[in-house]
Image 1 (cartoon, one colour):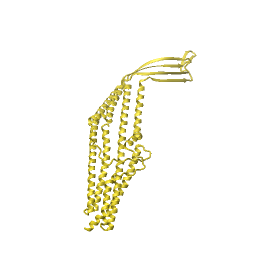
Image 2: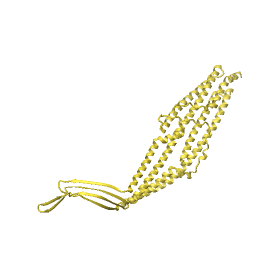
Image 3: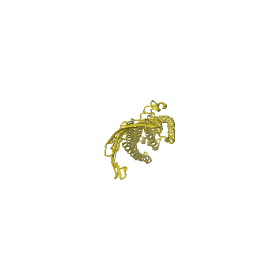
Image 4: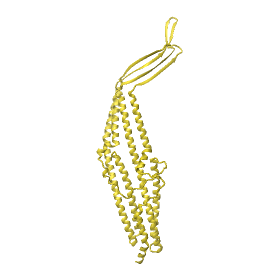
Length: 438
């Protein structure tokens, strides 16, 4: 009995410090690093400004706009100028005037002119070609929006990975301080002969585990910071982020819910499917137009000097072109385009249903992530109480050091699971908002 009392008196002060560290240690922040600290909004803004994917999508949109302007020029006159000069060793025109009498003409000459033509009817190819060019602009604009969403989602993934690892590192820092104080108290108890070296060795082994975990997390954190920096275009090559605001649950995501059917028309993917159908219909019209008659008018100014005499003149013309034999192969070409239209219609129906299912799946993932956060929060409270009880039991001599260290491990794991579930929730929230067109 006296041995137990002595052991209690020696360990009391150190273990009280241990509990104090447990309660307040997690409010301490990791020392501020030299890296530039970016908030999530700042990371998103820089990623949208500097990411290569966004730049390429912007270039593709500009290419589509230039293509539309090019198609618009088909409505206007087409101008051309030609010129030819020649010189021969004998006249191109030989006239036999009689016995021994010949005349040679056009030994040299010049022919040239300027002409203009304008199509009056091309089977709708020009009109539908311009419509198709505008559809291409809409497609590239939607793809640009998709690229923005993908860049935002990837940035959030990288950002919350850094946050999660920083929180885990902070937890390890607190655990290290707790173990250091516990080690001092156990060493004092061993020296006083009130406990065995086995307890001391268990604490030291636990310190080794924590040291190994710190090394792994520090390496992963550095790499994650570098990946985030590269993605958002940070020249320094590494960035830092602020910690999360403690163990406070965000609002329940129920306020974010939106009916999938009504959200479908707000998504980029649905509008891309519609534009694909529209493009196939226009392509069919263009194909039909290739096998219809074309009518054009034009005129020009011509000049020739073939017999050493200037001969300028004006001219006008009209042309009608009818592809008589083209309809044989053209009928199959048109049929092929009709089948393409049907495929686009089927794809619109099928993919729309899949988009609705994806929204529901994203909602399920979001609510599950929130539920996991709630469970993790309860686990922290239970792990804290478990650690407190095991600390009291160890001081009273009714549990072993192994039990106390196991309780500490459970507490650390509950903290890690919470920050993991928090990061997952934030990413799933972004996915759901994007899936519903927000």
